Length: 478
Image (tube, rainbow, N blue to C red; front, side, top):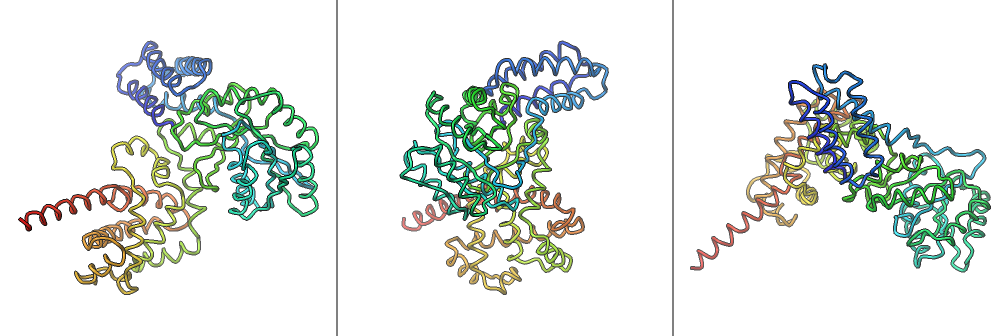
């Protein structure tokens, strides 16, 4: 998301940067383009107008007209205003002692509430907590089954009672169960409706009275744009929310909800769902999101992801291998798998400064090429992985047969590996695989992205070779 909005922001700022002299009229025209972009992104009209007026006022007040670098000054002003628009946000969950801490999730049907409950449970587990998921949605068919399945996937207990028709009693019993079994966080997955109605709100208010949750989060579907903002306002008027969780932020949502919710409701976005997998829940940081929108990337989040998925001990061993020039196909495979765990490669690369705009001009990233690469490497013998140069024509045919690929694919991978080994070795002095070398990893990911290994180019080349072979066979038959 935000691609179109980011492009329009960048274009407006570039127009200012390219002028020798900046006038009040130039700034007003540029922000007029930004306002139209915000409205197209489904940002609330009042929010868009006030945002642009504030930027113009601060740009004039900052003497941008006399500045030697008006584009840079505008970027800072717009960045600060975007951060202010979406924040401030404290994404931490404050746990009570003694527990359990009760977190109640509310939202309309279809907003992703049940999946978000499981994601939140996995998130608090990573902080050393023992959560209990509570299936308090007694309205939607199979809601209880869905929560049980998700709980099994993350190995978290789920409290369910299919005979119960009273969500309030069920929630009270669940909190009592958590107290007696040592679960210190209770996550209530409450019922939703297709629209806000009196029955839904009455049930939610009764649960709040009886259970007294420490945190009430509203789960909103980012794909619904201003509808998400309107429902957040309605829920907040009835329940006094502590924050909002925006789900489906990895889709083609235009970003209006993310930019409008805080300004309209006064309640911050605490978390965002950025994928279907249960580990794809991120804390919301307005300053980092502003950086993404303006095409400046999000290096802080990227480094955090790298630290999470790269093992420090393994990193030291890898560093030694690099310094002694013993980097093998097995080592390559481990590093590629670690980078892949950080999330979809396209999303990872967009966090690098300037990469968002470049991604449009790059070949489509085809992560299936990694599966093919893994199959080829695993079809090699230990000796061949350690020394790929020993792979001759007969060995290429054998490896190709074992991996379901063509001998030319094997040869291509070995050539690519040679280039990678040279590139990785050049990064070794920067501590690529450990300590401060997290930025080195990002550089490597950026370099790898341009190679056939990740792109659709390898697949395209295979199709072209296949066509040439078929054409050759036809000519031979004739």
